Amino acid sequence: MHDVALGPWAKSFPSSSWGMTAREFVSTEPRLSSFATPLLTIDREAAAGNVAVMADWLVERGLEIAPHGKTTMAPQLWQQLLDGGAWGITLATGWQVQLARSFGVRRIILANELIDPVALRWLGVELADPSFEFACWVDSVDSVELMRAGLAGAARPVDVVVELGSGRTGAGTVEDALAVAAAVDAAPELRLVGVGGYEGSAGSTRSAADLDAVRAHLDRIVAVHDVLDWQLKPIVTAGGSAYFDLVAERLGPLVGRATVVLRSGAYQLHDEGFYRGITPLPGLRSAMHGWARVLSRPEPGLAIVDGGKRDFPYDLDLPTTVHGPLSKLNDQHGYLPVVEDGPAVGDILRLGLSHPCTAFDKWRLIPVVENADADDPRVVDLVRTFF
Image (tube, rainbow, N blue to C red; front, side):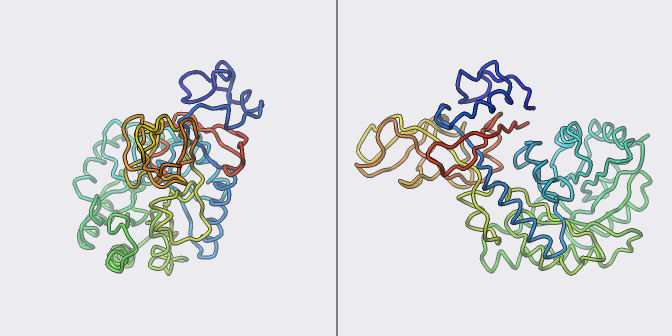
């Protein structure tokens, strides 16, 4: 990827970079001030620190992690996670799995049902590679039958995890999950390797009610694990980026009898919004920042910046600045309420962002800065995304 030629397709990159490879451009040691606005950057020191903090937390508890790659869809960042001790990579769609395989990822959890016959035919061929470890969700007898039909002639059986639901996909009860497991056992095209789910659908805050709902969901996963007769050491998996402490609390006692795998993905970049408010892990800091320029002061108390919905995430929280949060985003404009002596036209503001999953999909190439807190940060790498 470092040999890709830069051009106008790379949003906000200086025109002086056009025609250079990414490697050549980085070798010129560009500074942040050479880029246009709006811009998204990754802080190298913060991202590396976050990966190390989570790795230490996992080791202390004997847990594994397959971080969710859909957060960034950036194979370079996936590799940082794998180099930092990740057990594998989690993905959400058949196409994402295909992309990961094209970059050499060998162990993948598809945290979703896979019933698309086109994707299943590809998977059946791909499994001829004996080094490829793959598992996906199954949550109903109907999905078992559709998988069987799509996997006719597959190189080997597909490993599946019975998913327990908490408001999205997944078997609704322990009894339903056991019926799915029985259907898998009767299907020569499939092999039952574990049980899992996504607890994030059970809550969205640290309120007592939400925490109790998350624990109840995780306890159903444990109940299914305990009832089934495992021929091999099973995978037991849960854990988004909000409640992985509860996953450790409820699933951790299975360590030794099962491979307990978290799937948190947002911790690598973290944020200054939703995840900062809900994370159970101190020491994480935001490694992603937005940058926008004040375009206009059309009236007292209002500044308009040159970044909007096409540039920055807005689904959970709006971007923030040292002057306070933005109040609204249009496609290419942001509205910042300010006092009269606030930022002037032309000033560049650093934005605190919320939700990495909806930040990266707006950028095809993202500069990595050495330290975002520097006066004029040095760009040390470029990260390409694949959305």
